[in-house]
Amino acid sequence: MNKLLEVLEKNSDFSVTELAAMTGMAETEVREKINEYKEMGVIRGTKTLIDWDKLSDAGVRAIIELKVTPKPETGFDDIANIVMSYDNVESVYLAASNSYDLIALVRGSTIQEIAEFVARRLSTLDSVIGTATNFVLTTYKKGGEVFYNGEEQTEQRSMIL
View: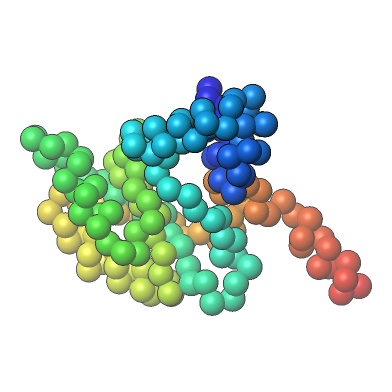
């Protein structure tokens, strides 16, 4: 694997100097590689991981599975492009599954909002022949970071006692 990309994936806040020290590369080489990766589309931006479970007004998230009839010319690409065009859809994946073809991670204010999105937007698309909605209850790990491992809950209980 590529050491520079591994370090950047874990934390994109490191300076070029820090990245050079961590990877054994020269600073100019680090800058050049980062620019090259951006031009190639390997680096697609930098994001902050948010633990939405810690906020009371964060809304709800759902994993929507879609059974799709692929188009002869484009396969699953056309329907995936339509699904990912909606603002509340965070991610779309083509899955190797016996039951479903596409998986979408969706955010909404309420369960009802997501249910309406599935009923009025996704299930009415020509290629979609079935859906299954799974609501996210707890995020244990996201983007390689552990969000919940039971310790926080234990600490809260001990404070109450």
